[in-house]
Length: 76
Image (tube, rainbow, N blue to C red):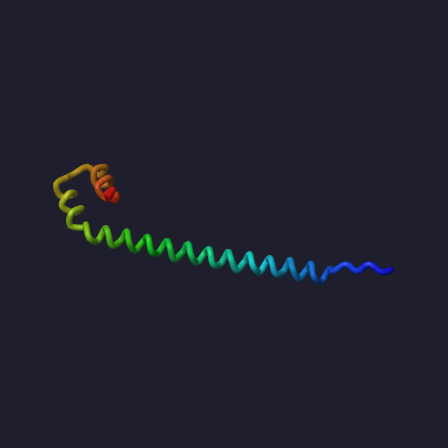
């Protein structure tokens, strides 16, 4: 009687898991990058819409703390 150990199958399964983990990591990284760029664009658009208002508030020497809190999103 002879016992066969499926070493090749185990090695192939381990390689497949490693490749799967790398692919999932790459997809997650790309998703985070795209999400970050989207958030950055929304914040830039918000600041560009309010740049005159912020400039007027700075011109009348409003404290920076008030400017910071006024730039936070308004609650609906």
